[in-house]
Length: 344
Image (cartoon, rainbow, N blue to C red; front, top):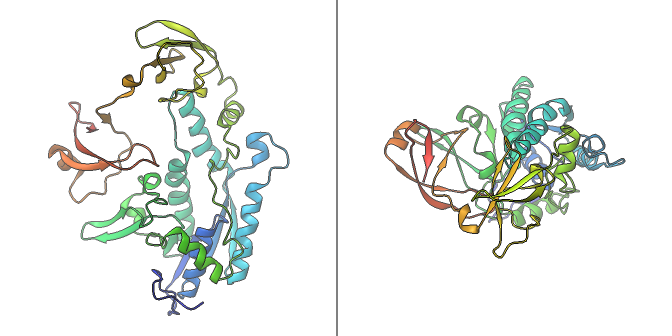
């Protein structure tokens, strides 16, 4: 391949730069990362994690999406001439991600398993394995920019705003970032596919995965029921004013902000305002009842220049995102009366 003048990744031949493990999912992004790092002179090792079995997770015999991804990663590795290994992480994934996912839904929360997977599997267990293999770095196909400052590495949003994955990588620590590479942070998705075609990668036009990997058809309640038998328990649908309006067939079927599917006659639209797992109640109310002025944070991973306590004490202005697909919003980072971190 001849590097284009506007190519944000320099693919010129380079001297050997040390070993890099690439987390190869079988998709175009991680495949291109492996190919480009190989051309740049790195000693590249591809690793694909087998995280789940669709037949066991969803009781769908013959489901083979995970197997196909592994085969795609292997084909790319063979084409570019790098060793490729498949590691069986099913047990770890089930314990750390799938079980946590089910527990959160049963507690009335709406979890994001990709965050847990990145935190517990990819940038913890897999990074540890990469270091054991003698690698200096772990590289992934995530769309996020890694910047090095006087205070250490920090994460910044990707150049391609539509592909930015900073929302899902917030828990990545500074110690981990010292050992991680994100080569696609400055590359638009369209360029990724074009580069992959130029390199002849067989996954250049492979569609992106849209579903949670272990819930391939979006029916997460089926998975929760299999992981946690008895998760579906009938209970009351209650208005915020205390009136009991009807019955539900399990709080795992509802999420805060939901409007459709409540099935309660009402002169005004009703929304799910709160899920009370202790009482097994779905609490509903008008749209304005969803308005929230402040949030108490948990699981904070602070990469700011000054200490977190100092930033909160100074009521630092920040931008926040409460959904992965929503634009950022101006906010104030401060301390609550009990010392916890609050965003207004």
